[in-house]
Amino acid sequence: MGDGTGDGVRYIDAQERRARLALRHRLAPQARVATPEAVADALLALHGSDPATVYLAVGARLADPAATVPETDRALYADRSLVRMHGMRHTVFVFPTGSTAVVHASTGLAVAARERAGLVKDMAKAGAPDAGWLKEVEESALAALGRLGQATAAELAREEPRLRERFVYAAGKPYEGVHTVVTRLLRVLGVEGKVVRGRPLGSWTSSQFRWALAPEHAELPVEQAQSDLLRHWLTACGPATEADLKWWTGWRVTDVRRALKAIGARAVTLDEGTGYVVEDDVDPVSAPAQPWAALLPALDPTAMGWQGRDWYLAPELRPQLFDYSGNVGPTVWWNGRVVGSWAQRADGEIVWRILADDGVGGAAEAAIEAEAERLAGWLGTTRVTPRFRTPVEKELVR
Image (cartoon, rainbow, N blue to C red):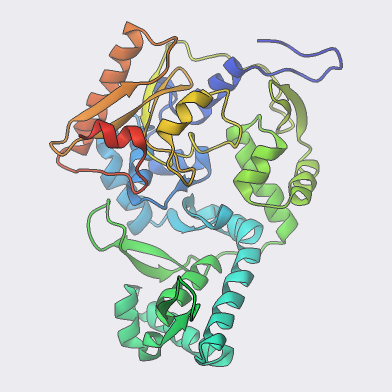
């Protein structure tokens, strides 16, 4: 690892970035943790668009993976120390509950304003009731949700029948459809930080959720929240480029630059140009003493953590590992690099395939097979299929 450049700005090479990833993302065996809360705190956010991703991402990082399902259920639905809500890039994530104020103020407010305006506009075009009516129905629905504790959209509509109001969206367009107020309104309320997804109707792999009132949180100034969010993320994922930060947060570049300045971020040199770390994070980081393997799920926050991925994912592997929308599928890792993919077949077998052409020998294959057995052990009879299918994952399950 290089110690710096002539101008005093330290150079951090790909090898050190992989070492940081192994330790800070709790992937090397010696870095694994005991609870889902510790996983979420280390990563800040777990992708929640595919419900199984949360559990699989936690299980890959727990010292005792047998605790994955009961402990994650406890954190999400009993203790509510983790919460599933909208966050960056208008995407559903699972966050530590203590981070909800920061996430809401830093990324949710602007999106929420657009979502509510869009719903009111669509209803007006369709001749549906106006914003005043919608606000009245919203307040009634939130009161009902408070009484019920948790409820599905249908259960909530039984309590407040006006939620069943239907209106035509995009009349006359090829994508014309009929929307129900309850579906659109719950989405708006979710982005606004007023409701969150509660316990699913089925098992932990189910994508049908009940709704619950969001945990109470302080209303933070936007700039303060953006600085706090960026500091937490950069601690977990630094070094990162300005492009990485803009992509991950979904902010304007001016917001990124202001937050970098506010936290006193330090510039470093990366292979792709200038990157940033938090102020006290410039010292070299050594690789774990032992080589490591990991099987990470589709949409895992490590695989999706940066826009620039060449330092851990060879460009030639991307067509096989991503779907047409840019969602990563299940990945096999060896010492900080994506080297292949994995899948679960109908009989429960975990199968994997090496796609990389170099650096993966017998020791790697033995370690990867051990991780496959570890995963199969805690999954038991549960079957998981990624919500977003990728070419190699489809091939592996045939």
